[in-house]
Image 1: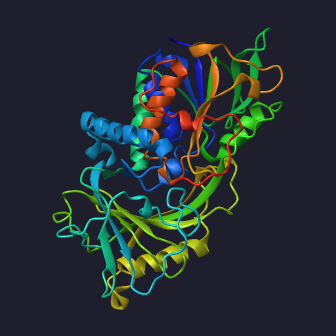
Image 2: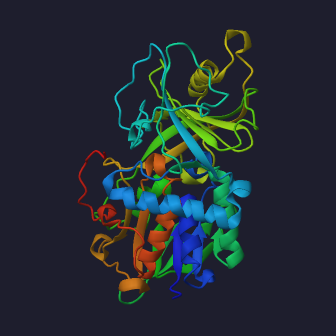
Image 3: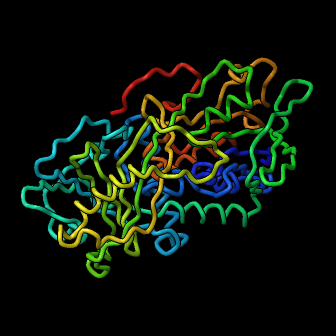
Length: 423
């Protein structure tokens, strides 16, 4: 099965899809197109990398479980602990003394909210499971919220690099930095090609294409609109911006924390819910300050510039939660500061779907069945890394006409979605 396949967007969903597609078709028939001058410069490289097996709404529960097991399998087979920091994680929720939790919408992770309430269990025993780097004060309420072997941690940037290396090694073609310009059709109006332009040299290339997959994250709707201007369909992918810090703490003790990483969900007086994820090697990812109002930059602009006032707010919260106290406020080392844009839908779950030919616009069609099609996968919100591998598996199966490994029928899209809240 070697129908020419073009994937627009080489973030973690795109490279995961290419990885699994190339297991079942000639890899050189798979093309990845990415406009950003720096690979993995948004959510794929700057997300927390937290994985969960059963923290999901019913429509994505099968996909979440499949993806979690695929993360585990891939790590076991390819040395994921050493190559991309895969590790089991212990999840803890803390309610800081005197802080009131703001309104909760955990699955969608909107402004000021926490996803800790999506955890399916609350356990009592914390013996030996509280990290050494978390500052605890009298009156703090702490709960263990993960069952054994149901949560894990990765460094998403390193995972993306691994997946891309494997794709290119197999023969998948990477076009970077490049962006799509237009589509070509035959005399029957069926999709036959995608014209792309190298954004450095301005050289244009025509890629043969019978199957088009759009995995452009927050930019997915823009890409669809540009390529299908006659379509009346709106692909309603919006963006949720998130600032983050990567820190090192002198209270990190590798020997005491060698059994696994920690995920900490807490509260703060500034009206947001900090999230902290420790990683193998001593780094702590600190985030939770999100906004749905920050403007989405151009996809070809590269890495987004963080807002100084938001970084200052994060740094202050980190000192209060992870610092040693007023006498040692500045003992946290900032390794990296970041801003990324996560793709979200208003109903809280992603789109993983073939777009009906009738929704592509007048004069546009695709070859039937597994020989062609236009597909979209985006809108995973805070769960993009967690659901990435499962999405790649299922989307590759969908595109190639194979039996699906998880039921994603609730994620199909035909323009008739309504706004609902995942639970």
